[in-house]
Image (cartoon, rainbow, N blue to C red; front, side):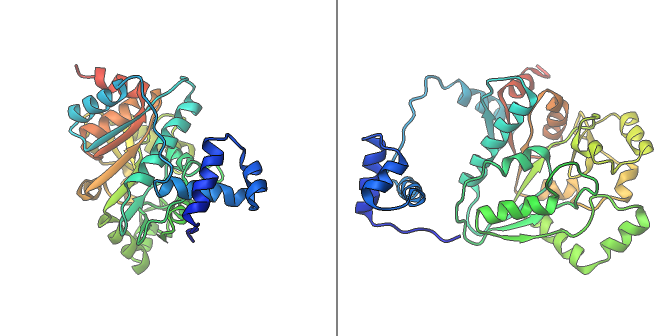
Length: 317
């Protein structure tokens, strides 16, 4: 991703016309003699270089206090809470996704290996990413792709979108999340390329994961990749959530299931060894999955909405 370099005097004049004179980007382009697109790029560069500094006077520090409370309660490294203005699940998902996009952009450092798993909210997050050049970034797919996923993006596409946005390299795990049977899984796992990617996944500096449930509307069950008897086993064993196709109960205990014989992804034990695992999830159906993930210490950073955060703070009190 090529970074534009504009003369400081030009950036200053464009910024003054935009912020002081309230001219539109089209009008600025007319009077300066450049395109509207170039005006936009100049304004972006002016903010990135600190020529333009925007300050928002916040009326309350309640949000920061709630983030700190949740961080302390679950011994997390960080918490980001998206303020919701609606209980609509689709809007909540978008709010959490937007906050996650901002967090990733500001927290991922150069020469980081970022492991990425599929999730509805993480997919939605890609819509809110804004370009930034992060030198040496490598994005690794840490679980196989769902074979029957409904929607317009697969796991490989999600990893590519994130890598492209930050001008990074992408490493694909060319395998399904769940093979047809154990024999097929063993054959896939014997492939040198698959083994190399999974080994790279285990050595990631940061992992970005969705926190999935096991309800009828969950992403995992929606794919159709699980058999009826496997779904029944999940309910019988009181599974509440999954990360990368790995299951756990409300207490955070890892639950072994028949799907483990078909699964192609990083394990929860391996996930615990990654220095920073960022879990992204929100909405009323995610309370138990998030709680289980926190109890199991599978994540060190939580990004969720304020309604879910309030329920998490009230739980077990």
